[in-house]
Amino acid sequence: MSASSENSPRSLSGDDADGSFIRRIAEGVAARSPRAIGRAITIVEEGGPQADQLLTILDEAAPASDALTLGITGTGGAGKSTLAGRLVSCFRSAGHRVGLIAVDPSSPISGGAVLGDRIRMMRHACDPDVVIRSMASRGRLGGLSAATASAARIMKAAGCHPVLIETVGVGQAEFDIVRLADLTMLVMAPGLGDDIQAMKAGLLELTDMLVVNKGDLAGADILMREMEPIAHDRGKPLLKVSAKDGSGVDDLVREVFSLFRGMAESGRLEARRQRSSDAEALDWALEMAREELSQLLENQPDELKNCSPKKRAEAALFLLKTLKATM
Amino acid sequence: MQPVRKGRILIGKPGLDGHDRGAKVVARALSDAGFEVIYTGIRRTPEEIAAAAVQEDVDAVGISLLSGAHNVLFPAVLKALAAVGLGSVPVLGGGVIPDEDIPGLKALGIREIFTPGTPLSAVTEAFERAVTEYRQSEGR
Ligand SMILES: Nc1nc2c(ncn2[C@@H]2O[C@H](COP(=O)(O)OP(=O)(O)O)[C@@H](O)[C@H]2O)c(=O)[nH]1
Ligand SMILES: [Mg+2]
Image 1 (cartoon, each protein chain N blue to C red):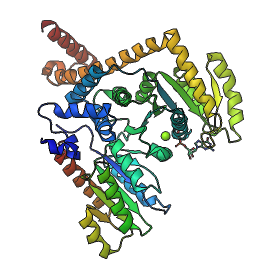
Image 2: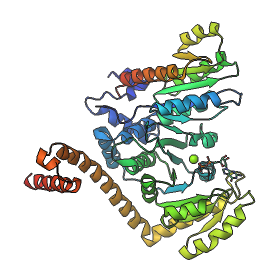
Image 3: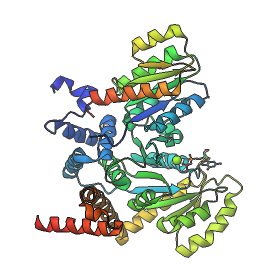
């Protein structure tokens, strides 16, 4: 590629014989180029060798920043996106450059998705220091949490601090994202039956702070009273906010930073990051083993194919182990 | 190898009118066809649409308009996209657009124009073609 094409959009296209494309992307991320950041996130989302290359270059160039990743979870309609937009405003007024990853479920049938969280954040659309990315929950190698973690890594490399991750609190994949964040808040709202759903889903245990949103609505105080003993028993902070009019959001931000400081000082942050790294590694390992195992199963001799699925699985696993041992 | 994902499309609605039923129907149809559709909501400026398209790294942009300002807003979106380095991303438009305006808009670089009554299948097929060609030309 000629030097003159360097500034054209084509210079960020994917034909890459010598790895210079990925290096250019990595440089662009460090230089906070929106185009490079956007491409980089797609590359890591799609996984594969280019993703590995890119993450390796970024890791070599600078250690992952210590930026806070903040998970925001809760039922659809609780006001997560609206609140995220408010939080972004707060962080911006405090001088932070902010990243936001909004995950929405994809259709199990088509694999497609309508990602609409940006609607609530358009006031930040032209702010160069707010990096927003919508993600669908399916359709990638290595699992959703790996993709989200990598996207957060890109945002951090592009100077974002903190990185917010919004996700609907249902399904295993979403649970994994909650676990990946340093700190998570469960957003509830009156009139959604959230409290019960959240308890069923176990999100109360997984999240670090409980937030009753839509504080401007009449039902909010009742929900607060319901949640108070629950929060108290678990030693979790409970806050009332209104993402609509902004009340309580400053207090919420103060609470977030105070919890984060406490975690960092007590060493809990480090332990948690180690756990989430373990979980991500397991995610990858399972994904990789999956391919190998499905091939082994496919190629099993006919007499095995007539055995029970469990027996076939054991045989495949045994073969895998033996193959690895002789390598 | 089959790509893991089919592609990403941004659906934006510039202009002042507040009706986004059509845009939402198209977004849903594209999602049913397997695309990840980023919907930005109504009353977006061309600059907001372009900034979102860059961050979301989309393979096509669809813009929907009812207000009759297409001869101003469609070119403005193209210009805003070019300004952020997305000059080659396919842009498809829909809305109440008189036949006589269509050749001019296409000459400016709007890849397809859909008017009321265009079957949804024709819309999704046009996006499929546009995304496939774009991804090929970008080496994706
Ligand atoms: N009254 C009121 N409505 C809110 C508040 N926050 C969000 N909403 C509304 O609740 C709906 C869902 O909000 P959204 O942020 O998209 O929720 P999400 O699905 O959790 O991301 C929208 O109609 C918002 O305008 C709030 O604090 N008060
Ligand atoms: Mg949302």
